[in-house]
Length: 84
Image (cartoon, rainbow, N blue to C red; front, side):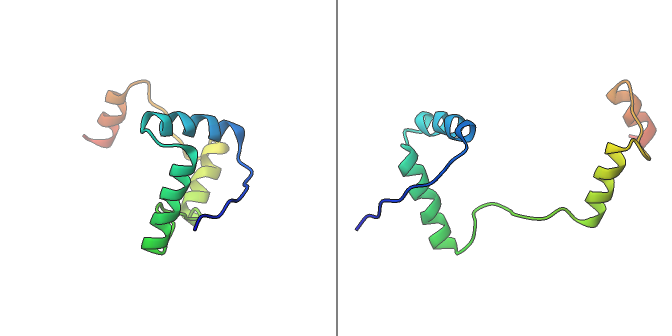
């Protein structure tokens, strides 16, 4: 038995993901069914979902406010600073 449903999708995500599905020979419905099959079999979302840790939040805040940040003109300069 199949069930028909309707979902609202961000148009940009739809278009870009549809290109990938087309390349793989999948319809949008095939891809959704594949996703749901993996969820059903594995009993989880098939990719990591996480909230940023407090450390990551602080690092983001520092970057946004240019606090405790260093910039380097080249990768070699960064590696030299890191002792690599």
